Amino acid sequence: MIQIIPTQPIDGQKPGTSGLRKKTRVFMQPGYLENFVQSIWNGLGGVAGKTLVLGGDGRFFNTEAAQTILRMAAASGAARVIVGRDGLLSTPAASHLIRSRGADGGIILSASHNPGGADGDFGVKYNTANGGPAPESVTSAIHDATTRIAEYHTLDAPALDLSQPGQTRLHQTEVEIVDPVADYADLMAELFDFDAIRALLASGFRLRFDAMHAITGPYAQEILEARLGAAPGSVVNATPLPDFGGGHPDPNPVWASDLVAAMMAPDAPDFGAASDGDGDRNMIMGRGIYVTPSDSLAVIAANAHLVPGYAGGLTGVARSMPTSAALDRVAAARGITCYATPTGWKFFGNLLDAGQATLCGEESAGTGSDHIREKDGLWAVLIWLNILAARTQSVAEVMTAHWQDFGRNYYSRHDYEEVDAEAAAALIEELRARLDKLAGEKLGTLIVREAEDFSYRDPVDGSVTARQGVQIRFDGGARLVLRLSGTGTAGATLRVYLEQAVDGPDGLDTEPQAALAEVIAAAEALCGIRARLGRTAPDVVT
Ligand code: G16
Image (cartoon, rainbow, N blue to C red; front, side, top):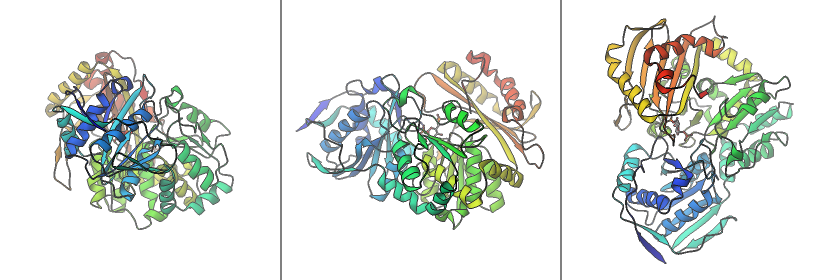
């Protein structure tokens, strides 16, 4: 029985860098999720007759939200909803399912790397038929719909049993429950040389994959342990939990400190990796070495031809603007174009769809390719394993050789989290007002070469996205970027991105924070971040 429930617009339902993210309790307020979901339908011009994919990362409220969305899709006449068993799908698996099943779009329930639980964060994002995050034109239409909503449609129906794969029906909508892992694992087997990886793992090579009690546990157990033969127990924290075991499922040296400790120990495994809440981010380590996401992207670009799925070479590569220029060095050496986009995976979609880029990545631990339209944590792990198998070198040896061949871009990001939103916005606005006059100014020991507020013109559709971060380049190869995060749910997060390029052959093995000391000092000299935000140090250093 369809129910039409009168409602009113709720303030603040504006999708950010990656969908709508709020405190879980905000999403649990009566009508909050319903308003946003109905606004997605309205922003799309309705879902009658459409096929949708639905799944989430299993965080607290995932189950209830999936049932609500199923009822709302059925009440609005969707022809079919393909849903992961128990309402679960990793973000990469959802992207793949949308593409492989020719769906019109999909809803992913996740706040990604943000903590979960009743007091944590929840999120909803809409992906389009190409499998990628909705572009700005679609998210603005959805936001617009949230400001005009007057009613939502749902069903008076009991919860569906989503625990077994199969077909069922809700009102007039076909609901297909699928194994969340199988299709994705098959795709990985097509891209990579599983025999070579299996041989590597059989040769005594040890790995540790930390699923951080998030969605990739079952995926990693199936692919790494069952299909590739990694020793049982190689996948740790493998059981997804609604609150991620109280942890912060963000694969970086701070939040995955257990993995870092294991990889820095004398008896460390050969390879270590982690993924985030919804499985799209990755962290790569070798024995005694952490690989920055920017370096990982560059190494993958330089070695992709060794991997079956990319043996034909790369058409082009892309990185987000704050990501280091290590990728640019590889692209220049290989004679391919390297695009710099704003932060947000959605900006890679057009380049991937148009065949102008094969490989994309971001400093925020996202790496992926044209196999889907999201970043992909386990894909990054598998391409590294395939490269290590093909090169018969350790991670540390691969990195040393890479820096010798291409030069090195020391890189770090300093985050000031949950700071006063007005103070952070004022800091950025004042900086913007000074940009025209910065060239030639001395900040600490560094001289500004050029300064800009990054603006992106999409080479495929010509759309322009402005005000995407302050970028300052210095004489001598240093770069500083400042921007406010678009994924936080409390206060503001200021991200300070620091880079120092060294061409080599000398100076390639300095400790990164030491190599970046002059840029760190220049950032303070520029705008007195710590004093203005009332902090003595960044909260997270990656
Ligand atoms: C999301 C986006 C990424 C972006 C990251 C950080 O990642 O998909 O493209 O780089 O947020 O964005 P911000 O700096 O605005 O917080 P995820 O893994 O959270 O979906």
